[in-house]
Image 1 (cartoon, rainbow, N blue to C red):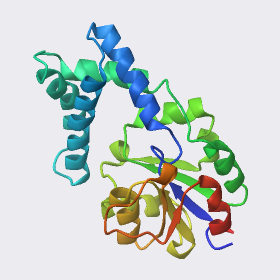
Image 2 (cartoon, rainbow, N blue to C red):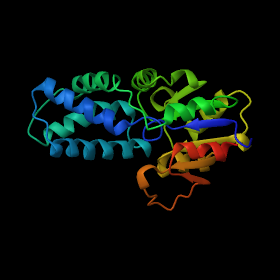
Image 3 (cartoon, rainbow, N blue to C red):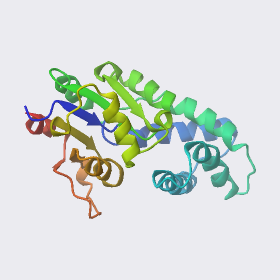
Length: 227
């Protein structure tokens, strides 16, 4: 068995964040009396995506991201809102949706038998924990490492140094990071000297120059990689 320490990203790898995000956004708009449209959701995703890229580069902190994304979005349609209040309500809704990637629960359960399983995620602490609980997968993880709690985010070396320092007996040679983002999971793993596996579901292509040690099109392919 080559790898017995598995570091799993969550959103887009094990948890179906797109579905959770859509449901939570629709619910928030309904509660606030704003008509939901696909165009409005697309606008939010553009604003949110831009802020996350700034966050992952270390240009802004998580607190700024969270209080700003709804305020900027609604300003674009002429509404002046309390961005933090909307954010808190949205995250409450988001934490109630624990949709999983097809087969993820089975794969994590099977891999946890004889291996040490950890989560490494850029996200908000309580939201990610709640979603794992609802998905029924929290118990498979020895520990969940969340950027908001750590104070650093993937792909920064500070994030991975923290993770490695907290895992007793950590051995880079026996560790594998598994995630869907070349820019955060794969780059972060490579910078930390950890082997990497890109999860490329539904034919999603890696359009970057960042190459992983392995690529899987389905989570069940991890069985062969992990031995």
